[in-house]
Image (cartoon, rainbow, N blue to C red; front, side, top):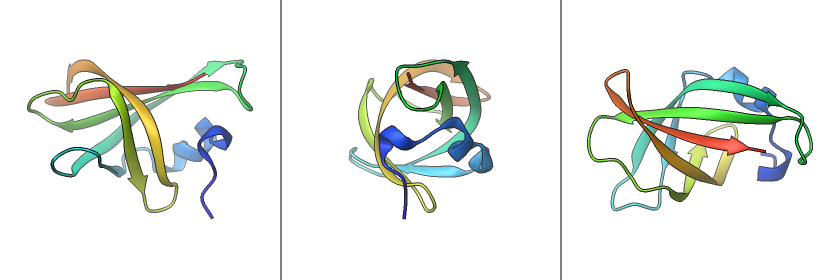
Length: 98
C-alpha cells in the first residue's frame, strides 16, 4: 500500500530516479521523468526536507499548482509543482518537501 504524502521521504523516491510519473489535472496526461532528488536536511516534517526535479517534453510550461502525480509503486499524490525553466531539452519542474 502506498504511503501518504506526509510520510514520503527522499529514500522512497531514490529507487525511482529516472522513472516516469503521470501528471493529471490538465487537458491531457503528461509524462514527467524524475531526474534529480536532493536531500535538504532537517525539516518540520517527519524525515528530512528534500526536493524533486521532474522533466517533461519541451513545450508550453504548466503554471505552478498542485497536480496529481501518479507512479505505479508510490501511488497518486497531489504535489505542488513549480516550473524552474528549460533543462536537458525539456521543461523542468520542482517539488519541495519541507
